[in-house]
Each structure stands twice: as C-alpha cells, then as structure tokens.
Length: 299
Image 1 (spheres, rainbow, N blue to C red):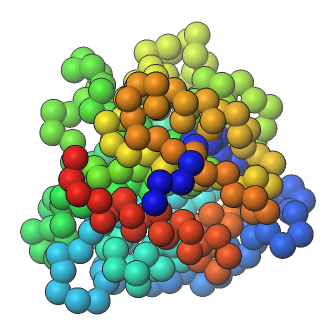
Image 2 (tube, rainbow, N blue to C red):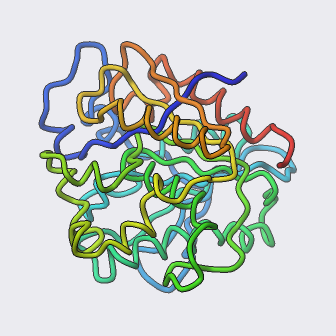
C-alpha cells in the first residue's frame, strides 16, 4: 500500500538527548540504554577498525532480501551503530537480512569529506561480496537510514547521478530496490544554515560552508541529485521538534516532479526516536513499508 511519505532533516542526537521529550514518546535514553541486540556476524568491509558491518540473518534457507541500515548521530564520532541494533534485529526476525554499517565520522581520521561517503558506499556495495558466502538476494536490497543516516541513505540511492569527475563516482554501484529515510536530512545547504548543534555538523562534514566548497555540496546533497530512480519512503513523527517538516515535504514534492516514486508519511503523536524503536506503536507501520519495498517486483 502506498502511503504518503516525505524526507526530513535529522536532529542531533546530542540535542535530542538534552531537549525535553513529549509525554509518551520514545527518548534517546530509552533507545540507547537498551542492551544491543547481538549480530550473527561482524565483518569488516575494508581494512580499518571503524569500517565494518553487523550482519543479521533470518531463519530459513533464503536467499533473503537485504536492508542496509545506516545509523545517525550528526555524522559525529560520539555516536555509533548500537542504537540501531534493535531495528535491525526486528527486521531480521521479520524475514529481512540486515547489514548495519559502521563508518568513519567527524572526529575520526579520514571522516567527513570524503571518507564518510566512501565508507557507506563501499559498505553497501559489499553486499555483493557477502552474497558469495551468505544466502542474500542482491536483487532485493533496500537502504534504511535514520537522522544523519537518512541523509546518507538518500545519497546512496542518488550517487548514480554523480559526475564522472567526482572523487565519489563509481561506475557500478549496487542497484537498490528502494530507500527508506526515517527523519533524515534531505537538504544540506538549508539544514546547515540552522541554529542547532546538529545543523552545525554540516560544515565540518564537508569541510566548509556552501560558498566555500560548492562542488562538495552538489555531490552530497540529495536534493541536488534527483531523480533517485528508485522508490523513496520518507517517514517522520509529527512531534519531532528537531526536524522541519517543510524540508521533507519539499523534497518529496521535488522528487515527484523529477519523476520519482516518492511518498511522505507524517505520523501523529510520535517523535524522533519512535521511528527506530521496535517497541513503539508505530513500528508495525514502518516495518510494513520496508517489507512492501523488498516485496515489489524489480524496476
């Protein structure tokens, strides 16, 4: 079922942890304080301590559809993949293999431009290597990202539009079945102009402001790399105080105008971290959207 969706700008996990939460919504402490759900395999996709993924496999012979899962945290080194382990475990229990990526971030040697982008790209393409050993269906791969990870998920779907002269260009990126952005950042230029602590991370991510390094923004900003050419599902909580809904709505409209199958779902009564909490009431709806994407016939 096609529900109206949108892409959104993500909140800094720092800001989320410090700001007051709405009654009844999931807080950062609730999701980050839970013990991480263990993975079946931790595998390095390149020779660096920070470039690995956690692979979780469903029961059964397969081959299984795959969700590449990308965590948020303002692209900052303080935040890692642990809080997304619950989402990944829930999807694997629902029959979708999950490959949850860790990558170099701001504060790490090589993080930011270009390492952060190179890592998530290489980690995603590594699904083809994993499929040589594990029962994975490389023709049914979706990318899911939360917060700053939503930006990276959208960028992964958009990188096929990079110019050949870009240092991030590769000729054969893994073909995706779709992308799911959970409160993700869609426009780096607009988001970086905001006053929040996560907004301030855009400049160190790219090594300058838009007027300083315009080509870097052009190569990494999902709003400037449309059309994606795959279905995009953008989900956000109406009570999330950290992400302007207008940015998501604008992205969805722009993507549709470019010919994309883009939808925007604004969910009432939830906030930023409900979207990645399988114990939250909204989770069944999110899981259904992800399952629908991997179940669709190829494009």
